[in-house]
Length: 187
Image (cartoon, rainbow, N blue to C red):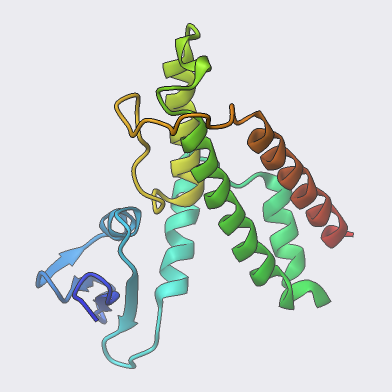
């Protein structure tokens, strides 16, 4: 396993300071969030007990971003998550969330493909601003893990490629299906 494929080991000392074992320096939660956005897996362990604290710290990072007004998770989703901890749905929620984010990443790939330079929408006034907003949204939703978005200088589309309206409709249908499933789970 290469160095970048192994999770970055962060040790928490009794003083609650977090220590990056690769660079031999102390890091903050924001540093850890940066590693994750950069595509790196992180593992946080208690130095003394060896307990895995990764989940606890990732939740803390999310909570801090949400409290700063970077609201990615709608209240209805947060409420549903809280409910799932007290219902029979607990066993399906992790799988559902994993599949949802996988679908989101797949949808993002399709959007990137459709927004390439050959897209007729690219000549629309305000297209670049709209594309930047979509990029920021997708980066926030996926934590920046899905790689770079190609801009107008990205790879050219193949001759005869579809206009992408079907793909967008597919994504909308998938989103509607996910919303329906979430509604059913909360009842």
